Length: 294
Image 1 (tube, rainbow, N blue to C red):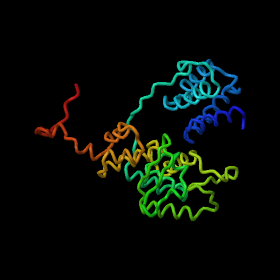
Image 2: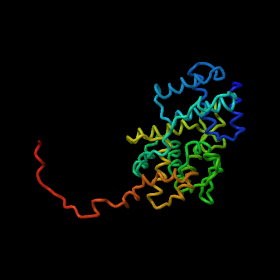
Image 3: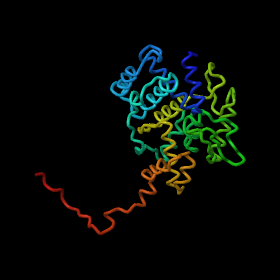
Image 4: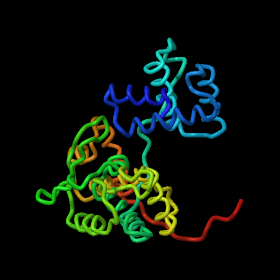
């Protein structure tokens, strides 16, 4: 471990950043250093500007992805290296926060899970969909977080390090039992890493991404599916089946209720309940020949 990486990790821990944020920041700083092939402490704000343009113009990343990269570099230069930069020296792109997400139908979710190529991927997909948890939360899941007496799953370190509980279905409980009994080696994590170099660690979020990508391909689903798609589908289907927004907000761990209200745009129950303007008055349906081309 380099001295700079050690300082970054210590500063993240001192400020009580989540493990997911720490991983994202360290990875972003590493990519920045690799781009210039120099240590970040030898680079400055002009290099940050060049790198941000590279992300936008050449790699064509979404603003949200660029924002994570820039937030990591802000943390590095302002908090760790104590450079006297203003926040405008490392600007964050403007992000549209509440775009309507893509969701799967219940049939597409079934096809996705059935197409999983192995027991581990099937269990990952079922856990994501049945609990609505984030991929980082799934990676940090431990067996003791599964409460079979109360039929709940405890998520002790959600976004913002906030704990919450979500219901555990009997079907998911049986799936988790079957999967856990099949493990050739256990290391205290529900989903342990199978890499020999990471024998004591949980899976990385890359494994979760690959489970979604490979199962989507095998299922023949043309929609872009990523781990968060199952979270969106969980919330939308809950709303379709009568769950109220405040309940869904608690299950998702949303602090701002406006983040939960986006699912009103996706719920077929709510959409079907909206009256059709044409049905508010009688309009006769006409039939006859097509008009002649002019």
